[in-house]
Length: 513
Image (tube, rainbow, N blue to C red; front, side, top):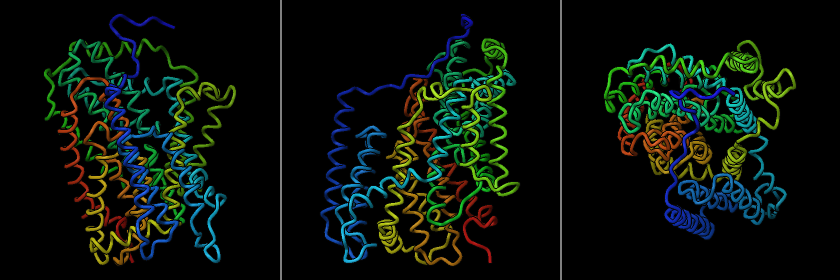
């Protein structure tokens, strides 16, 4: 292993700031107490017309899950196990509408519902995406790509920002994990900041790091495989509507939106956090030294690049040149990555830091949504929403705007877009099925509203990638909030524009005759 150059610091993932233990303990304790109180309150509330006992039990579990996830009262992986246990024992004790004479569901049927998410193809895709992210880290290919792109950029500060955004865009295609992309890019940005001898608390440093995180979130909208939360929506669409959305169809719908929002992010960030200097002396030389330090491209990197590009080709040509779905081709790619000699890593290497907790949370989140639909709890909630908000005959535009505003506001309380999608997408689908708007495209509207689930731009705690950026200490939370509000307003304006033009023209909101 070559020693690091004295001018180029060793890049390590940033350490997230940890709030005082006492404060965290109080918040978690209060959150857990509120979650249990909400669970019991919903369980003991009077029976409502049209809501089966199993549906009421699921609403109680939903209330518990939402509060636990919003307050982070339990670790996400632990919360998934606890929610699974609640589903098994609470549903087992209530009558099953599918059985004669209202017999209790029993633990067997309840266990099947609690584990239903694990059989969803979207879970296999998320797990496979984690393997790809692990392979990128193990080989260093993601870092090499980032350095190669940035080495093509001159030393002007605005151009460095554009380079960082370009890296975020390219990695969105080949690293199907937002957290992994930002975890790769942010340490590189920090290395540059230190090597450029720029003050860590300068506006330029904050601009670079915040822009890297926000760009990752922006392209979660345009690329189906860029984020786990997109797989939640795909999983529910496949299971409940017996159809799917291909990688290319998603890209056609979302990429123009992400492209325009990326331009808006650049102007918002460079105006609101205008860097102190126009050019970094020796910037290009520093980037090239970092690139030289990691040496020539290894055979493992070439093999991984070939596998990932082939996989991207299969994703983009699904239902055009072949009928292999995204999950199947991704699993095949993982098999190639792990094969002796042909592959790029062994099993032990792939497991270093593998986020199994994320996979379990994802699967249980889908189980919650599936159970909400099967027990009629989602339908009952949807009926209340449609009746109280007067959506029965509302236009597709009005429905999209109202539900989008709801998702943007409620996201402020969530630290995980995956958790938000798991709880809200089944309810949104039920709302769309309950309205009487002529020709409404339920699949297309669900996809568009899933785009909004990725709008975690305002608070550092709204997404793991935001917290990675915040952990660098290059900016204050208020910097993230004020620029995040501007980005959210720009995203909302684009949402209105696309909802009045491009998306209706493409038939995503209402089906053409």
